[in-house]
Length: 326
Length: 219
Image 1 (cartoon, rainbow over the protein chains, first blue to last red):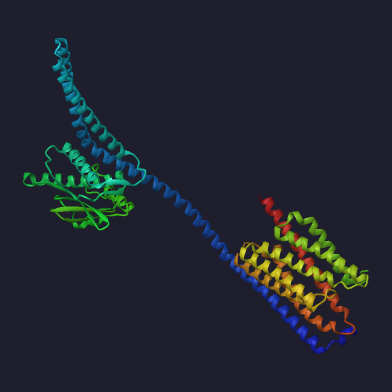
Image 2 (image 1 turned 120 degrees about the horizontal axis):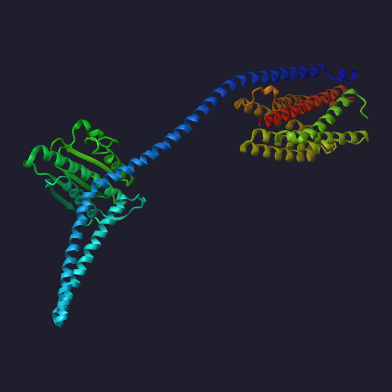
């Protein structure tokens, strides 16, 4: 203990004071830590329970989203099938023509073969050769019309098939013309009295446009079906004084191709014009429309980086403008 | 050999701490495995130092070697506690830095047969900082239901108290050291203080082993 007396009392006092200060500070810090820890723990527990709730809600939302996606796929499929149904009459008519040719020419060939056999029995080789040439020509025509029917069936299958989403260079004029005819024939079958004027104005030199033909075909078909539906309605109301007209035109505008489908039907009333692209919105009677045609058309145009818009005057006309990038 | 009560207390604590560390080594978390190793290593180094002093030889070299090794062990403990890439880098750099300073200090300032008090002071400052940082981390993510029942709390509290006072002690030591006949009570106090530190570490190891056991039993 005596050794401690060697130390300067001032040094001892400073050391003791510093030590005591540090001790108080450390104890204070630990007390503060324990107090704030408990306080934070309450917030943390609340946060954890909220997080768990959010996680469970997230799982439920993800499940709902999956179900929604599945339902959407089903709806798209149904709409596709509905448009295929609309096309059926037109397609049947398209196939009927080449089938008539095939049937007629095969009948003619059967008669010609009989004549050929007679001439061969009579020993008239010159006449037999002439008949065989006729048979050959008819055979070529049968083959030609058979291929035409084959192409129509392939087109129909392509329409119903699930799209691969692959874009391919497509002749937009040919595509628009094909769907105009198919849609018109389909409506002609439904309403025999329909005698609409079809006008086309396809700009030459647009070239091939990179798009998914089945998808754009479906979009055009929906627009054309609406056009024919409205002119039929107007004809029913106005009678023979009214001349239904549907116009399809294409035009190259800067880096876009513009497809315009115009009808002189009922037009779109102002009050519903902002609902036109909403899913399930339809003015058609129950069972005649899914209300998805324009909504899906809008999505198709968007997927292609394009736009769809319309101009209308109630009771006078409606024109839909589809713009697709070149 | 161990004549005074303080030495008996200190070495007894170290032997018990090392024995418990070896027993509990497999049952504790990664961070506490390093604590166990630190306790065993401390016993070994203190026994070697005692051996030197019994044979009237300077034992400073033991502390010259042990100080950076001890700090490295602490960096491994705190790295396991923080579990953060940024802090792993900081801890690694601080350990390397301390080693460089140790070499510089030994070559130019405090020779090998002297206790490296300069480095011990730097190490103490670093450990106080690490301890405060761990308290902040624990507060930010208060996962423990009863933090006072956790080994990590007691280990970190011990580090904070011990090394904060260690800075003061070695500062005071500089005054005392110059005296012709330094008072032994200062060193006895240090032995007592060290003993309490290692006793707290041992308690922390036991608490952690029990917590792990409960966790395993809970499945």
